Length: 547
Image 1: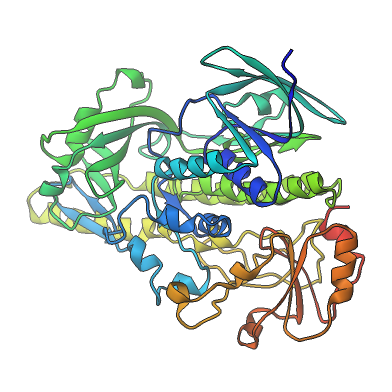
Image 2 (image 1 turned 90 degrees about the horizontal axis):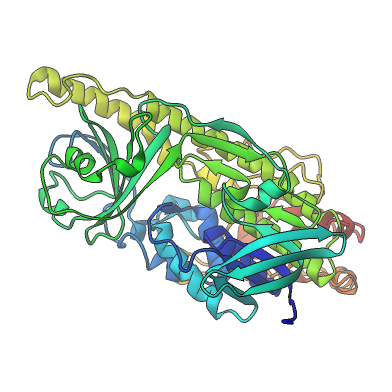
């Protein structure tokens, strides 16, 4: 009989969340086994923005530059525009930076983060994650395998997995099982965990049944009446359709509202695209798939005992704002360091419950913002006569374009959602009674208040091109940031005796105003968990490690 595969963590699901969890576990020196029931990474695009927090995680993992090399070319126009049809009238334009401008000295967000948002389809990024997962000695990647069953007790998890090509079955023994298997995944259902929230009502756009179309049409660039943008919002008497450029070389993704009750498998996508374009063009439909917009669902629990959930398995978003995948990636950084702490013996029994305590409120927050943006987009009705070649038609286009620019610009500027998640009430954060900045979706105010994202700073005047970020100097475990030369060997000795990884970092005086206290303790996921006027007492370790 084949002996069981023994691993600290079994991950089910090999999308961006599952692979990020695996890579984060490996970063924190914890082996894992990842199974995915598909033979390869996604071949249909979705998730077109990797936000600043996600890119910070990729920077920590050493992947940011490679990920910035895929997706929309560096100098491709980043704008989102509203047109009647692609060969028709431009009604409004939301000016957005190119991928190159986002990482060029002088871009305002570089004052807040070393890694601003990047435009790239999830499909391209998954391929990068898969290459690195395959190559890492601590990650056992098994695409084309599924989990048949699992059971847990106080000592661990036992599961059976199957090779879908050969039918071979293997037993797996793991300390923990993590379900990254999506909204229809079996792990959540097996735990009896329910979703709560809104499931998408039938309105004009970005709610209910939608069709996603992946197509190739290089000739589209020849008929554009404007500079080729990143995103088109096409609005006319035939309906509303969005189209985004994937690579600047003729590959696009489109999504459109389907009539209620229509079988999506019976739909020919070509008439939808022709209505958006305005004329017949050579178009190669690569794939199309239905999906439901307007979802705003969160699991009532994130797990139980030794089995936990991450990503779509515990929250389902509508795509407005681009929060879904990014929230899932942020889940994995929070969860992975806690799993690693348990595996390495320095984490306490409260850490996994603390994962739910910290991350579920963030999902609720992000879902509310995403749904609000979807409702704004859906509420903009299409007036009759919008395409008329008349003064009345021109006036309607000006009015519609002005509303597009005023109402939808917020969708592209939610920096507070990206970087402002707060864990100030967390049981693993030492609250000092101070008030954190307001949680504003559109504004991020850096703060060293315990429970906030550690403030970013550049350690040279040249920003990203030649300088290093403060984050780059943090340790893999906890980092004690100080602004003086006081001997910290006692703190280091206490951490070492407990097996807690700790790096002491003396910060330059130039960034003192970002950090209000002489001493700041920063967690492995770059969150402040304590600050003080004097060195930390020994008993704080009980709190921050979940003992």
